Amino acid sequence: MSKVLILGANGKIARLAEHIFVDTTDSDLKLYLRNADRLKDFADSHTLAEAVEGDATDTTNLADAMKDVDLVYANLAGNNIESQARAVVEAMHAENKTRLVWISTLGIYDEVPGKFGEWNKKVLGDYITNYAAAAKVIEDSDLDYTIIRPAWLTDKPEVDYEVTQKGETFKGTEVSRRSIAQIVVDIAQDPEKYSRESIGVNKPNTDGDKPAWY
Image 1 (tube, rainbow, N blue to C red):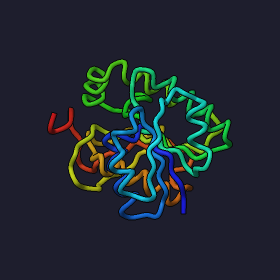
Image 2 (spheres, rainbow, N blue to C red):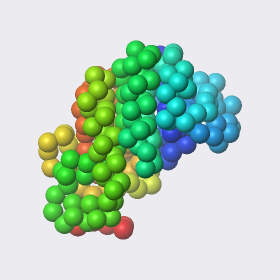
Image 3 (cartoon, rainbow, N blue to C red):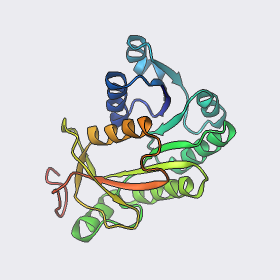
Image 4 (cartoon, one colour):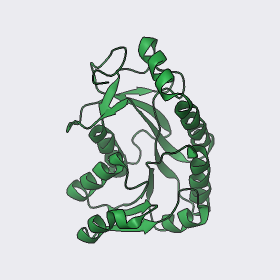
């Protein structure tokens, strides 16, 4: 049985992952978010889950939350994502934790080809730059990380994806949040999966100049 710390636990992918964890595994969950009341009902109704209030740049608080966990899953966002990455790495070092799953975005290595790549860069702009800087912090660390770079996200109730590695051309334009959540849960159950890898994740056969629904 493992214990997973979920940073940014009220995010859409994180919420899906939390439900998959409680429905299909015996993992304990520690839910870390700025306003713990948001997940109070979920935590109260699941004996294996507890909600912890804190900011993802607060290294001391992060380290305290990490004390008894086996894996850290960071589902973080914001203009200060690089600062959050530094705080997470520092806190993990302080508590001798190694396994990290980090949600990033597509395009951080300029790996998205053609017209879709141009469109993605134009629409996301500084978002890509910030997430690239955060990913570099993770990759430059000695942590046992998995960086996940999803395509444009949908709310389709499906698990349907393929994976590309860093250095390979990104495929497709979209993927479901549920697919990303399932990958996170799978890694928590098998921590050697995608160890020290940065993976692009997309739904097969969704190539195009932009996501079909955009």
